[in-house]
Length: 360
Image 1 (spheres, helix red, strand yellow):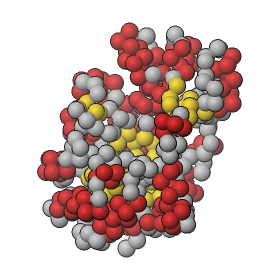
Image 2 (cartoon, helix red, strand yellow):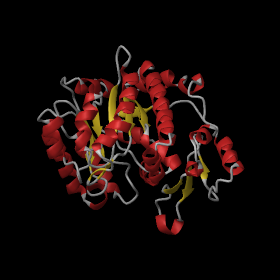
Image 3 (cartoon, one colour):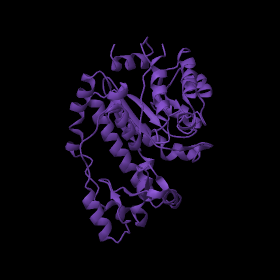
Image 4 (cartoon, one colour):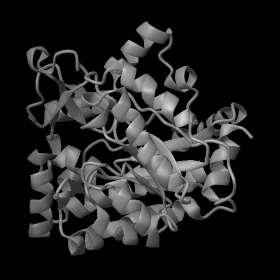
């Protein structure tokens, strides 16, 4: 069976041939891969199981930049402005070193004082068919290669909102009940919902949602707070993705320890939990609780094993996963986040080799 068929069989609980593998990298690590392997395509270089589809261009960065200037919002010199209004500034070369991809975030909508003012920015039309038109062809192109057709819709509600408004200000908005946070949450909920529905209708196999709501000491907000503001919106998005004859699988990403809401995520339709950080959600604790209701993605620490371990440590971490695979856990083995340039290349090769040695 090809990689897509293998993934679908695994997720259905049927016999499958190999453990799916993914390998997200930062741009400096892609540079290293190109130097060593002659390609910038990790899917090609490591024969990864997943390939990604995207949506059409949306938003107008020039309009956002002009609007910020017109309103006197002090956009930093040299800042990048995205089509959705996001603003990032390059990191200081002396402090970031070879990690040139690291940027500093600026929150332009923190200068607004009302819902009406927020609404008056140049938001793109969510009903623009040009955004969603390429999805079906992109999905078919990935499926033709035998890969799992995947779309990444992380930053589904919370993160996109606070990137623009600022996290502290978002919390203040909710405390003041001024409507700004709710308008932004609903805007990004609808954006995610429309993309998810279009991807599902286009035949995508896997949709990756997510918002970081955890720290390594637990939730960054109370569970009742999350259930009030984010669970209903996420449920709405997932329902839109699942309203097709053959629904895609749904993955949810949050860094940190979010064990207190895992049962809620299962309840609203999440099929795969990512990244299952070993530093705060060890697989030996997670798998026994949820392996019969949930698949897992990640598990190989990017704060510990990958940058600071050696080849033996990498093989040991994969072996910890293999133990649970043989007990029936469904897993996509991958780093728990993108690989940063402090990861030794030997560890990258060891991860790829060790995953391919597993016999489910």
